[in-house]
Image (tube, helix red, strand yellow):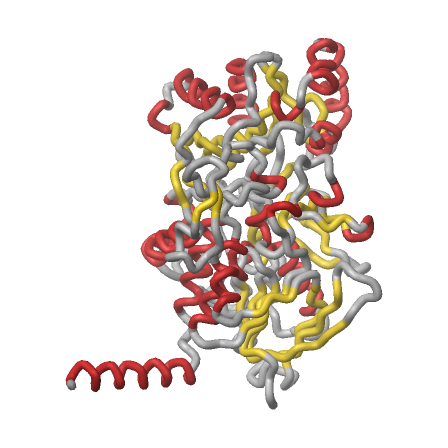
Length: 540
């Protein structure tokens, strides 16, 4: 049977983009299918009040770059669009701590620190990582906190996927010998997470996907995969039929493609939702572990608003500094650009407690205790200019499970370990001390304050690695157990809690997975023929 493609990649985030470029380089015909839209710098919203351009809510005809998903146990922030999470993420590229490599279902399958070392280096180079050169008010406050805690040596400028250069000055591609797009220097506006309008952020459409398209990879945007089925009805040895539907237009357009192999790279919310659906019918041989080992990075997102008029915490890159508070934890200061104050509508005074009644009482008490200060924060001060978001993360494992309910929707269930919670003692104490440094008041998501539901921008797992189907969904090389030429290469494959921003790790793991795939036979023969010709020329 004549197949349309060698590989179809579902999703264009960090795993899918790496896969697209490396497979195309090896001579394979590649199609990337992405449910989100293409974006150019001018397409991004100026502030996050432009919800139609910022949020992904298809039934409201909002086709922005950020999606908010609500589950019983967790609120999840994720990205959409060509380039996936790179469009909306905070650019930070830290390498995980030692414990990451030695825990979880992948423990013992390889010496992961050694295996990934060179791939981390390659990923940093491809993503254009550079050390943040400037600290602004929010970062300087974190540095002061480090001093008060006697952790000065644990405070660092972040490595970020940003082109600094000269602010707003456009230059020829500085990364790929002018093979990539022109770039402009960062002006430290703080708008990284609403989409960089200044062409300074190294999103995946400017590196991996850009280069992949130049050598033939195709990208089909605004399209969602609805089914993946083996042509032979069994192991997929003859290839797969991939059914799709138009995600943004009317009427709904449905198409079908065939490919020798399939790479699932839709992120946890895309990949696991689809795999749970496919296991019911089209891919019954999938491991029973699909949806297990969901990781939240054990993190909290707490906002602190300063009452000092002379502070402006909106300036800088989205995450410009990091404080390693102990061997398992660290704290980052996150910012939005001036004018991006939408989040205040979903925030209440920060409180903790065992149940909703205690928390609601805490919120009311906070308002009554400082009414003037909270009026200033919510109504009179610029929210983004005065508010820093404290992102606290831990490498300690606590997991959830995702399952499909009777209505076909993906829902969360309790997993192993302690349930993820917004009430982490270390986070509470750090929030209190940072508030003292900037003379601020803390607030958090309404769903955390009242519902005791944790929030995460780094949902991971669901397709864990294992030595066989009884332990995992994929093997150590990301191959899906039970099916040929089928892979999971995205955050779903992360099998231990990294405790840091995971984008670099997903990229490095994807680079390693692609190294295991052989060059296409026709490409190999062509390369051998070229080498023979060169040998003949050199001899003559």
